Image (cartoon, rainbow, N blue to C red):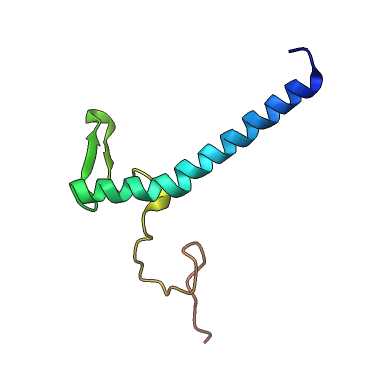
Length: 88
């Protein structure tokens, strides 16, 4: 394995398969596992109790897979945007 092209080829393969598996786990498997956990323990039930370190709940198992929480703000403005004020 002293061929430079072979080494570069394996390095590119390793990089690509890492990005692919990360994407599959995050985008596809995350919502599925969150739905399974919520069906088993309720929407915010405890999946794993870690004692003094807290607990893993169904909503924080995969945070990106959970639906956004309702807010008192209008849905047109993002949560980080300042509240609109009326001019005086």
